[in-house]
Length: 242
Ligand SMILES: Nc1ncnc2c1ncn2[C@@H]1O[C@H](COP(=O)(O)OP(=O)(O)O)[C@@H](O)[C@H]1O
Ligand SMILES: [Mg+2]
Image (cartoon, rainbow, N blue to C red):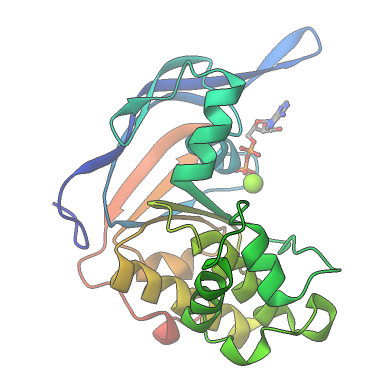
């Protein structure tokens, strides 16, 4: 069994394919993917551009639905959910972290995080503050995104993703826009969240050095699983070199 997990299956792909229409023909973005991800795993997905990485994340995230096969998340088959149920699924199960932070420029860091809680109640501000502290930005709560560096903005985005405490975090090229040291700091924050809170993290990147901090690395090629590698001794994010 891979490290970092209690063994419980949290995401199960059964012969999943995803096909997009393209003019008269179609693009097979994913083909016959069989994959089990266990609770608490930190999984890195590698593969060249167009290999299906974002499609895989979007299916798990309920941003898109499978063309065939079954996708079971936290015991629930999400393959056939309607739009409303998928929205509810995303709200409760998934935190997203994107390449381009996607913060709201007119809101402060604290407000950006609080906004993710949707229903404002007495303790939303406290929860948002705690999430900012978790990513080391307690002192920047009242700054606007334009007053923060790229790495700080990405950490606000991480706080926003974890504030509702979703069991699964999906990250698509989260360091793609960051310089070397800043990128590693962002990865360190994700590793801490995985280690301390046990959240399952799936991180897509084309930087193969990042694989060394994962519990498992999955390589996609032309929409198929080309290779799965278990990492015996995952490195600390700050030890990565690329
Ligand atoms: N919405 C879409 N419509 C049509 N084709 C798409 C769509 N999304 C992705 N594709 C195609 O599916 C394949 C996989 O894309 P993607 O998952 O974005 O790859 P990656 O993230 O690895 O670069 C590519 O050939 C891409 O052009
Ligand atoms: Mg992509």
